[in-house]
Image (tube, rainbow, N blue to C red):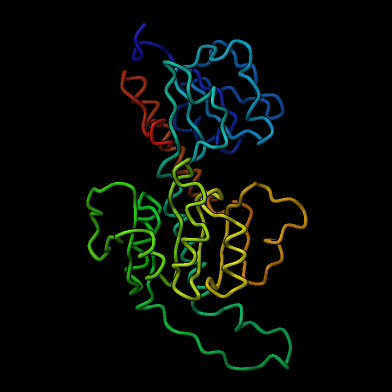
Length: 320
């Protein structure tokens, strides 16, 4: 039976609030809400799986008996693939899509908020008692240099916002294709990006090629006082090297929404370092992201029913 002729049944690990959005958009399709405590095995009637990440300690577990059951397509709830077991991503004949693009604007907003917090010295300007009453000077944002490591959906969304505020923007990405955005210049290499940026936002995928790309050698090239913002994957940063760069003043601030590992163990230095703003991988948690991702799923369901490929299929050779 062709893709177009097969009725679709959806199995969802994403939870009630998201499931309501899918049901509202496609009330004609059966949707099975899976038990979050034990989402396996899947019923043979399910052709679509809305998959959530698994706990790190479960990544190495084998596929459940019967995998891939009756599945034809898996939609991941995240852009990255590193929190999903390999057997889910590499099943012959099973199409897998990421949430690419669904969270770009919201994550860009989060990164911009961190830039404003540091650049305008909001932490130093805040007071809690009369003795703290003092004036703190801070430069305006116009003319500040934003560097982007990666120039996908998040990088492009952030570049548009930064340009509108008068920042200069440079980007470095794997592809040699034109950046395609007026006002954004291409950095020649990582050293140039590090040396030319006041604020460096990491928006590259977490792959074997990008692991610890921000290491001691890269940090040694940083403009003194550089503010590093990581909203991508913790694996991009060598945490020990970052600590040394912070303590020696080469890096002024680090705003980290992602770490390696996640969650960090109790007592880890990142929890209490005075130059680190740490959040628990929360920059994409937003009702707007849920709505955007639901719309993306609904478009892909229609494509699948028409015998076409869903959006944002993974490329294992690239690692995203």
